[in-house]
Amino acid sequence: MSPRIRVALLALSGLILLPCAAQVIAGLPAFGSTIAQYGERINAITPEARHVANMVSAINFDLRGLDTLGEEFMLLAAITGTVVLLRGRRGEGNSERAMRRPGRAVIPRSEATVLACRIAGPLTGLFGLYVVLHATVTPGGGFQGGVILASGTLLIYLGEGYAGWRDAIRSHWLDALEGGGALLFALCGLAPMLVGAAFMQNILPLGTFRDLFSGGLMPVENLGVALAVAGGFTQLFLEFMEETREAEEPDEPGEETA
Amino acid sequence: MTVILPLLFLLTAVSGTAVVLVRDPTRQIFAIAINGLVLTILFDALQAPDVALSELAVGSAAVPLLFLVALMAVRTQAPGEES
Image (cartoon, rainbow over all chains, first blue to last red; front, side, top):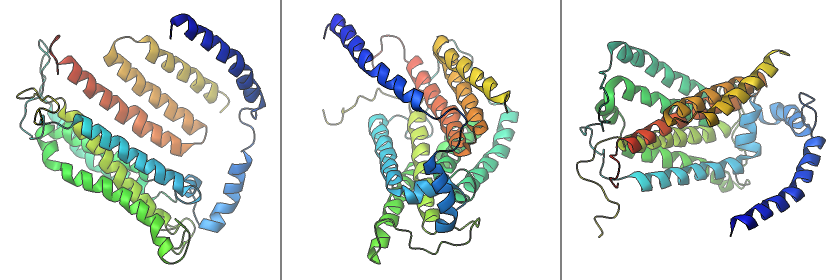
């Protein structure tokens, strides 16, 4: 396609699409006006029907649970793809030297960094667990808490160095966490079918409104998401960090098969 | 609230433009992280704490870190050396 045709195509599509977009934007409710009808319905129905205080979790894990299941496997597929692309022999052990940029000073880790990481690391983990557990009560949930937990493990790298980080985090456990979390979510969908209910129907007792274990099946699904996200993101960090290690010999993709 | 929201919109516009205008990749990564932080505050001011928490965890912690590592892995390879 020559550049001239491309510009003509752009102008043509702009001519058609821009008025439509302008019309839609003009039809939007004004900024800061009343909540949309769907939101009002959710706010009115969910506390009584599901005993859940955090509407976002109620939508994610119950009313629109199937969408979240799809997203869960999307994340699993994305991380699997990254691991397949990046996993080589580089950085598998914990003794490989970090790559150095020539001419750049190497500053040793200060004791203040180590101390700050040792204090902040457990606190970050605790906060991540809090966000995960209170999914049905306060803002947050499995995804947010899982990412916080995964980021917390990076403080081990910052404080203890690469070797300490690799000692603390086992790649196989991360695989199990990631796959197990997704499996748990899928089982939450299938288990109600064993007792004759619909896929992902909330069959567990709903619990008390504003209680930690309210929402029936939601805390279980939330736990599945938290496990998958925490394991998946840590795996992602691990694979990327391995790329900064110095390879003893260049690892060509497919060199074993060639 | 009437002062805070326009101020936050302005900050979002400024930090978003900064991400585009900063040309040094390392500084660009920090510009992205700052933009994520500004968006987090904006979402919180618009009463969307769930989205704010996601933006904080992903936009200003996880993504910049992956970019930093990727950039470092690219830079340490000598020019002309194929990986």
